[in-house]
Length: 279
Image 1 (cartoon, rainbow, N blue to C red):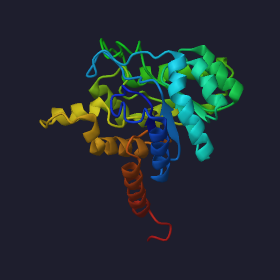
Image 2 (cartoon, one colour; image 1 turned 180 degrees about the vertical axis):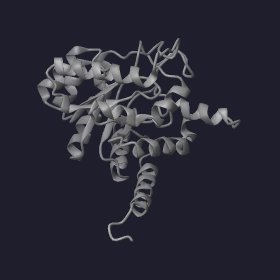
Image 3 (cartoon, rainbow, N blue to C red; image 1 turned 45 degrees about the horizontal axis):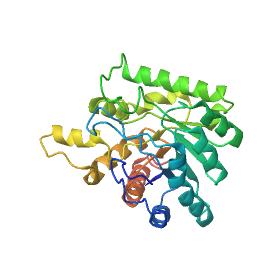
Image 4 (tube, helix red, strand yellow; image 1 turned 90 degrees about the horizontal axis):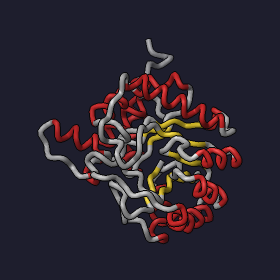
């Protein structure tokens, strides 16, 4: 899943793709590089209370739609590839679906029940992400009794909310919410134990690309804290763990590098597997 941020304030590439024509070109480039689908976001959901300060400002629905719809409409005309829209708002979701979006990616896990009703009416897939608290403050006072058990419980409750809105459970994809309401150490633990979420019975999407826990892990080793644009090697390490633990989707900024990495990783894995004619 290639990331296409249409925002001026995303943590990694905010402001680069606010021009609709440039955004469309970039989206098509990500597909040409090997992305299976695109995830368009017109409101930054950068969490606050941590390394990024106060977090991203909430954007009115009309402003979010104004950023999103010209790019979504143009991409829909230009490609048959699946297009995801990253939004928390039912109103924006409805307009995106009318414009040709194929699925919705909701970091609030149905904080707005109207988004659930829009998805149910459209019959499309929905990604539900784990987080706790409000975006502006969720990186403060982080506490889990048992990280994996709590995340599993919260995600199971999110699926129940989706079903209550009329969305079949088999249309739901779950995201453990790397970087949202979790410490750097908890993000590493969640990635390392990702397979423990398989009990939920739903495909997993992992979005770890360029996130702050990568920088913190590097800094903890005694090296300088890398800025987001210099975190590709760490992002690929996160992709490796996610892929090894059967993540269905990885959400990334650096598509070409990720595709090459996964191609070689899978080729090695195939050669390392026991052969039927061996021995």
